[in-house]
Image (cartoon, rainbow, N blue to C red; front, top):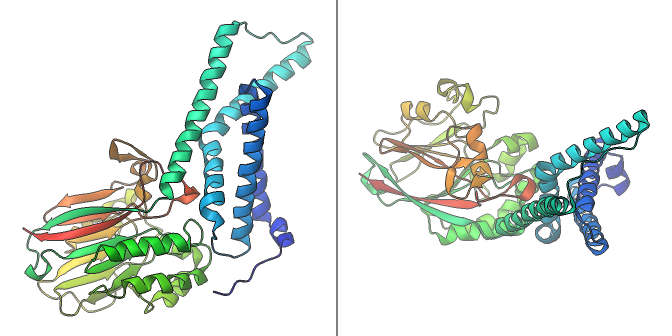
Length: 407
């Protein structure tokens, strides 16, 4: 695709870019000060300073790429993604401790200045002081190691999560029918073309009968939708096609242009549209993202089918709903849908290793990750591919392979 890069001077004069740079570098300076306080040896202090320089150069490179209008390049996996995870580590975990340390330092300074007396420092004893410093340094290093593992694992190929979905009254021709669900790709901001090619190849290798993409296809520039053309050729042999809906990030980017570029170029867009698949007792309904509604507003208000166009579902068809957000499940069941496919949550992006339901998204969404329901109707919430901020922990990227079974 043609690129229209902007001059670096315009990047540096961008108010939004300057604000991001100042906020992140201020946080890094506070965190660097905390790390140096915990590092006693001069050699270790020099190593910490070198790490801060390297990771911040990588993050600034990512910012230049974003504001220059270019898609993510080869440096994304090895330079930009670790640097962004480094920023996220400090923002979520280390910066709060650094702020507390800085506030106590200011309190001690002003106390000494206005009282005219030397500041009194509690005598913790050499052994106890060394233990506390070692424990704090160990905790910081442990968090750093955890983030390194998360970045490495996020960069690996997505997993194929295979599920059998038993449906009461499933039409006989659909017994054993395989659907591949892909979601939350965020191409152009959190996902690269190289990673997209790999994910699409894995999807094709699973030999599904139908592929659905449930939103957040493109970030930052709607023209990046053109990057899908070549990878989607791998899915040209899928018997019943590739179908997609838009997500909230598509709406932030340019929904009309994204749908225009993708529809008919290896992907059939269902933007508030219903279609009866020829030669198969299956009806697909795709909702446009209804971002002004949220699942915590109540099941009855979550979904709006009034704008949906297309022929009504044929008698005896399996009705499948595609929607980016996993909301209104009971409403969808009441509307006759037997299978509801959604994404949006990224599986919480951070979850407990022992329980996929103990994740960050569960705070906001009743249905946050995996398969929910029973034989009369199911909702599948796919964790998707990309990670906002480039970091996941245990909510690893996935492509869902769903096999329908008649019961």
